[in-house]
Image (cartoon, rainbow, N blue to C red; front, side, top):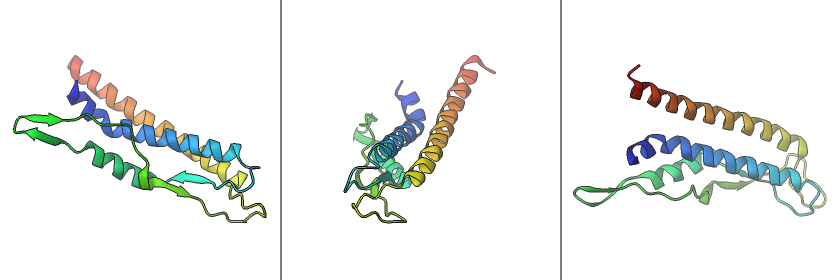
Length: 130
């Protein structure tokens, strides 16, 4: 089972990061009227670099390999957005920008999910001998 876990690990991490990004953008939209709220986003490339570092295998002995990993930690990947048109109440959420980013993030999540499904399908075909 650990072999399959490592085979799907990259897609698992990508889906987690994309899901967290959708949640952050949703929070931004929900706080569009909150004075002083700062719009947050995720630098996907930085988040995936952090996830890849968590996936590195560590040998505890010559014949042992540890592949357990925790949930993706955003760490340095969390960024605050600079507004195009600053507001008087210091809120940096711009609803049009957030809605556009949410639409794109949803599309990217769907694409990542499709890549994952394609990998599962290829494993099924290999097991059936197709």
